[in-house]
Image (cartoon, rainbow, N blue to C red; front, side, top):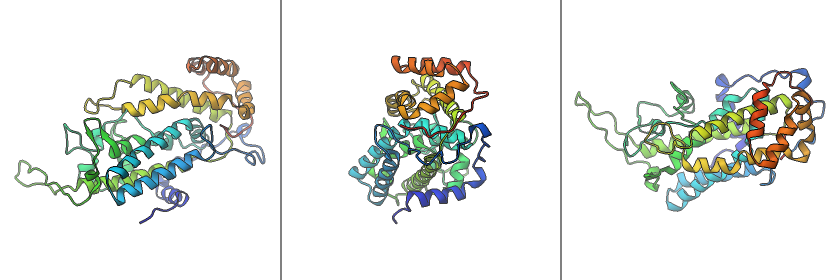
Length: 343
C-alpha cells in the first residue's frame, strides 16, 4: 500500500500523540509576532535550497517503501543513502527546528527526533546478543503508542524512536551490516526453551523489524512536520535554541569514543561524521545571514555581547565564543520582535 502524503500522515500522528504532546508555552507579549509578521516568512532553507528538508523526507519515505516492498541489495543501499541524506539536511536545519520547538513548547519532539547516545541492544539484536531488543521481544506489541512508551522507559539510553534507531534498523552495526534477508518476513526463528522446558513463541524478526521500521519512520515524519514551518520566532526562542545546540555539541564531544555498539552507550561513527559536517557551521552561516539581521538585533538588544560573540565565532569558525556568551546569559529578559529564522 502506498503511504499517505506527509501532511496527512503528520495530522494523523498528531492526533494519536495528543495525550503525550507538550502544551504550547505561552509567548510573552513582547515576544509575540506583530500582525502580518509571517507574511513574508521564508521556509526552512539554506544553501541546499528551499524545501530541502521536505524533499529529503520524501526521498527517505519512497526509499523505505521500495525496501519493504522488495528487499534486495539495491533497495537496501538506496534506503541507507536516503537516511543519510535526510540526517544531513536535518542537522543543517537544526537551529530552525530547535527554535520552533522552543517557541511552541515542543522540546520533547525535538529530543525524540535524535536522542543519543543509546543502547543499540535495546532496539535490535547484536552479534553478542542476537536475541535482544524490541525487535526480538514477542511479548512487546509493536504499535506507535508502545514505541513511544519504550522511549526512555527507565533511562535516557533506552532510545526506541528517532534517527539513530532507524539507522540501526536499516544499516545494522559494523560487525553485522544489514542484509536484504533481514527484511524478508516469514522466517520465524524458534526461541530456546527455558528452565521449565517450554519454549517461548517463535519470533519472526524480519516481520517485526519491518513493522518497527514503518512505525518509527511515521513518528519521525510527524515530529519533523510539527517542527517545520514558516512561523516567526523571537529572540527568546532563538536563545533557547542556541542553548540547546550548545548542550548537544557538548554531549557530542563527550561521546566521540562511544562507537562500539557492544560496549554500552553508542553513537555510530557515521552519525558523528554527519553532525560534524553540519554543526556548528550551518548555524553560524544562518545566524550571520543578512535576512536575519533584525532577529540578531533583537537578541543583541536583550543580551548585549551576542553580536560580538557571533562575529568572532564566524571569523574563527569556532563555536567557543558563542559558548562563552551563552554561559554569561541565562535568557532572562530576552524579548524583541519575532521573525522567521532565514537560511
